[in-house]
Image 1 (cartoon, helix red, strand yellow):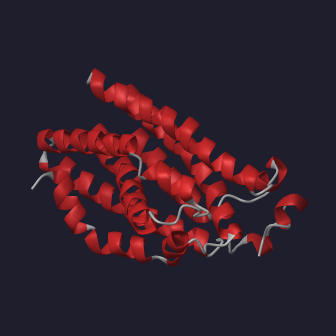
Image 2: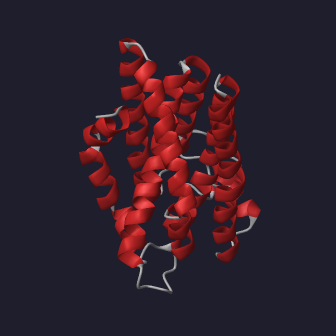
Image 3: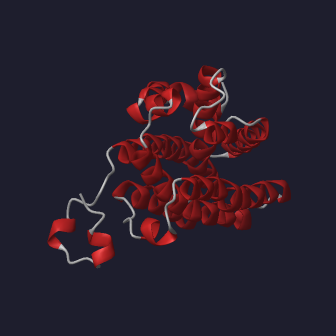
Length: 237
C-alpha cells in the first residue's frame, strides 16, 4: 500500500464520523439552517486565508519546480475560488461585511490555522505536505458523496457548494496532492515518515472538529471574563 492508502485506511473510522456528522447530514438533506452554514462560511473563509499562505510557503520551500507550481496554484484557488464561493453565499444571505467581521474567530478555526502555519514554518516539507492533504482529500470525498446522494435534487439549497468540491478538476488536484505526498513518503527516512503520519491524522481530526464547531456555533468559553468591543460582544452566546 502507498502512504496515502495506508493513511486513508488508518483514518477510516474518523472519515466515517465526518460523513455522519449532523452538520454534513443536514447539508446533504438540505435542512442545514442558515445560521450554522453562515457561521461555517465565516470561519472557513478565515481558515482559507491562512491555508493559502501555508500552501504558498510550501511552494517556496519545494525544490521540485512541478511541486512548487502545484502548491502555488492551490494557494490561488484557496484564496480566490473557494473564498469567492463563500462570499457568494454570504451575499445571498444578505449578510454585510460588518456583520461577518463582528463574528469572533472560533477556537477550532484558530487552532487548525495555527497548527498548519506552525507546521509550515518548523516541519520538513514532507510533513507539511501530509498536513495539508486532508483539507484537499476530505473535502473532495465529502463533496463527491453529497453529490451522489443529492443528484436528483436540482433545487438543493447548497448545490453550488456541493458542486465545487465534487468537481472533476478538484478531484484532479487531489490526485496530484496524493501523488506528491506518496513520492515524498517514499523518499523519507523512518522518523520523517512517522511525523507525516501524525500530521495527516492530526489534520484529519481538525477537519472533523471544524464541522463540529460550526454545528455548535462554537464561541470562546472565556469570553464572559473579557471586555469586548460592542460589535463582538453581540455575537457571543
